[in-house]
Amino acid sequence: MWNTIERTGCKFKSICGVPYTALPIATCICVQHNYPMLIRRKEAKDYGTRRMIEGRYEEGDVCLIVEDVVTSGSSVHETAESLQNEKIQVTNAIVLLDREQGGKAALERKGIKLYSVITLSQVLSTLQRLNKLDSDIVDRTNRFIQDNRFDGHVAVNNKSNSSSTTKVMSHKERAVKCSHPLVRSLYTIMADKESNLCVSIDCASSSELLQMADKIGPHVCIVKTHIDMLEDFTSDVTKELQRLADKHNFLIFEDRKFGDIGKTVHTQYEGGMYKISSWAHITNAHPVPGSGIVSALAEVGKPLGRGCLIVAEMSSSGNLATGDYTKGAVKMAEANKDFVIGYISQSRLSADHDLVHMTPGVKIQMGGDSLGQQYVTPQIAVSEKGADVVIVGRGITGAADPLGAALEYKQAGYSAYLNSLGH
Image (tube, rainbow, N blue to C red):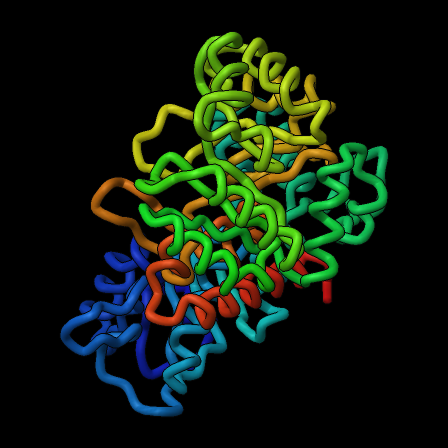
């Protein structure tokens, strides 16, 4: 990497590794070649210096960014933005491996020149020449690279039977073309309010839930609840929540995560003290019990115009919603689009525009909590992970100024969506 840096001839005062994988690389380069190192935090601490950028620097200094692998370029761009917020200039970045999936071009559009030690196609060519990979694997991998270049959150389609770029459908287009009425309603709301933000309001007090929904309601497309967290629940709470949904034009998503046999979830959805189907536009379910869970929920929800999300991936560390589990969830959703409207996911799982991808675990600053929750930024969730809707909880409800935080997340998520359209 140092040889590549020297070949570029670029001038810089300091070096910053993209957190956290590239920090050891940047450390070695700085120690061996006597350059100051800056460290970008993923989130500012509430003690000490409380700074996002640690190290010695002055306004106008030029910093070189170091990264290990680049796919879409979003991590390099986020690091550059943090540096630029401190009046540090960033014009160049060095990466060990460029996966050639659009990151270099995306960064150049932001004014950052990306240099790589090696590209993925060079790796494949070398391994094939040394008889470490056969030509079929190399050809299939090269096709994958070509067919999955990041342009926003949708891949640029360069397949042999198509010379055009896969068009990212706007919210207005989806509002017309999607088959499920609830999905059309959701995209209409998103287009009208210029928001792809869902806020998760988790609290023990009914008054706190309703006050928060009223405060942030004008800026969100969905309000998500865990209604069984309320210690003072009455049916009046959901009636008032429905009134606020009508007032502020948002949908209600009860995050129930049904996961039992058909008869049980049928009763849980329709009856009990919560009567979820009577007030929640959207609910969700684990695919573990099989397709019977969808049939049982649909029997209750379809006549009411409700919709269900399949929990295909989760944001907590060590979760088991991966691999074949996720593949099964996708098949279940695609086979039941008369009631299933999409996924709870951490990545884009389907090219079907009828299915909405909602991504939880979103926070302005990446990181995690003590209970295993892993956060991604709105930019990464939309541009890199392919989210249609970003779900934010404590980043808004736990903020000193929830309304201000909601506006910040709304702008960040919607800007990422506009970028995916090329705006």
